[in-house]
Amino acid sequence: MTQQARELLDATAQALAPQQGANRLVDAIAEGAASRIAIGTLAMEQRHIVASDRRSLLHLAARAAARPRGASLFTTLAEGEAHAQDRLYALLTGCGVDEVAAAAYEPLAGCQAYPAYVAWLALNGDPADVAVALHANFAAWGGYCATLAGALRSRYGFSDEACGFFDFFALPAPALKEQAVAAVQEGLDDGNVTMPAALRYGRLLQAYEAMFWDTLWEATGRP
Image: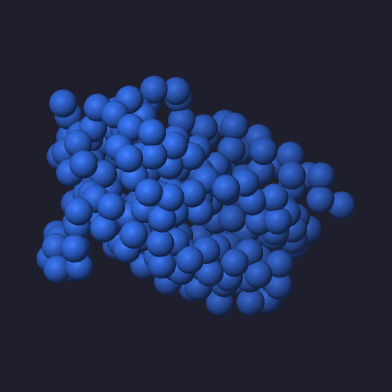
């Protein structure tokens, strides 16, 4: 019986969904009004975030070893970060950023607060609660990526290969959703989902996500 978990995930994602128009940088890119510097900076920040998130997810998988569905979910998510990392080089190249510039780039604190909190969750959060929070955040992130993938093609002339990073996260992932449902139901059955904690984690993840975009906007996105 997974209906309880499904309803919980859907309700949490809806409750924590960002307001329309809240992301100024994504809106600017969608209109073709942001600079390529802003897009390149976004890619360079993601270079740090993806690597960190992958390690955090692997740690969550190890902590959830006694709950096979939870461990499977986090392992799949970590594998997804590895696939995304493989696609970042083409995005950086499309932005005119070479390996030397990417390696020399100093990340912005406001952008790196998000992966720092994911790492905190990997150490401190119950994996089932973290699964609820991550699902809500990934729903918002996937929507942003779909907008970016379309805008980079239509407004900036990026190739399909250069858009592959955003395409990857924008793709519907029904199998992943089912894994999340199974993992959360496993936590519910074991009494390990604490809704106040799951909602707090989700709220803070969304706040750090917003901080990421706001920091980029203030640093590079303003017209």
